[in-house]
Image (cartoon, rainbow, N blue to C red; front, side):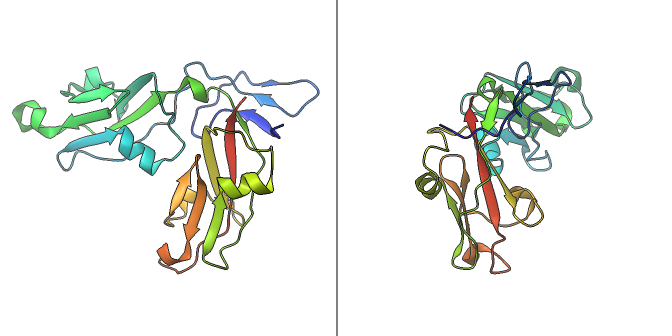
Length: 214
């Protein structure tokens, strides 16, 4: 049986104030109607426009967006809706993502800078595994692969994780905030940081956990 430490919204989802604690356990249920991701802003309109595509966002934020979003929402960094901003939008859907092209705007106007978020019902509730740290970067790097973790911890990780989270073991810094380059970092394969890919020549030591369906 999967060892479930907590029931929580996937990292990056907003918390609601109506938290409920299950009596007789340490499970905390944090419901979020709509189950929206965090807001993402990977581009700005200084080039050809503002390209917040799903493929690019998934590459830059692994595990933070579900495979089949049911809705998309965009707003300017100042908080305006798309309608209020008045820009001509090239695409805004749950397949491609959001694109505002400067060439489509009237009177040689640039697009506003937008952030986007996606509705992911599958992310409503996630049960996180414990933290795993099976390797250290003293060799070729830090290899926290899902295959090896399942072999060493049989029955503890679900077949199809929804999300992955990784932090450094010393300062608990999120992996994506360290500035290091990751050879692999997704919920299907785990995390691999290779020393040869780092400017310093050495990966930091990471621990990982996986979000599983409850």
